[in-house]
Length: 381
Ligand code: AOF
Ligand code: ZN
Image (cartoon, rainbow, N blue to C red):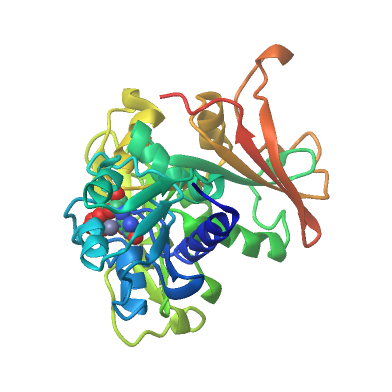
């Protein structure tokens, strides 16, 4: 039986998991709490893919003393050996009495086997299926269950839905507050997807630039995927300059003590990319394969959440092909009129064919408005 106290501790385990929001990519965000007689003995959370799991960190925080305790964990403990040893073995070895889980793990290597192994060893196991635990890992869950990342499309526009002037002028429609807020979506993403048109027109750095996203003094930079059929991305593009992880104290002045690895840039090309930068990796995809194939390729590279930051044509393609889960739309209280360009280019002729979504949240951000929409249908695949 799961009681009120159990639910409270589970929520706290999910809160701990949330600390990994910006640093964990390619693995689930997981938190763990070890409790005995109402006293918290240890807390742990998963910090980086490949690093120790939340359970291991919590056991260490408890000084190894977990005999007879209840373990609250936001994801089913693992039973396989990956880059880390199986957590169920560690929990059994430490003699825990009970494990309360907020979410089953769909990883095919686990998928119920974690809970079963604990039960086989005489540990009581309960699974609560807590909604906020699933929300936090929506990308991981979608990748494991469907082989697709969670796709979030970000756009900035005027209140009449215009993203650029006819001459292409598009920067700074929204406020500095909105642009700073938008960094959050980048920081939590495994990859940013854009089109070569945006790279050629704006030369964006596509980096995470704020210290608030640092964990242990490092800001993880998401992979950049450029849809660049003919390989036109210039070698001098600014987005090649970023590191995989940027030291937080070097964000403002560009000075860094050591030179970490460059962040990954993937070029989705039809053939070879004639100008490809040495740090770019060319992913050859026949044009006919479409955006669904691009997303599946990103999922196969452990991308859980993907952020589309592109111009009206690519944005329109994600919308019209139904390849999106969430849209984050920043609207400035301005009207740009009929000579400006739409935020998404796609055509429908009848109202009945319009793209209709669900409003998830609406918030003022500085002088602007942020609207978060969720797709009414699951992503087409
Ligand atoms: C995590 N952190 O706290 C838990 C995970 O390659 P590995 O060894 O890190 O294994 C990754 C898998 O481990 C992951 O897909 C999930 O099934 C399981 N649990 N993973 O990264 C954690 N508890
Ligand atoms: Zn584990």
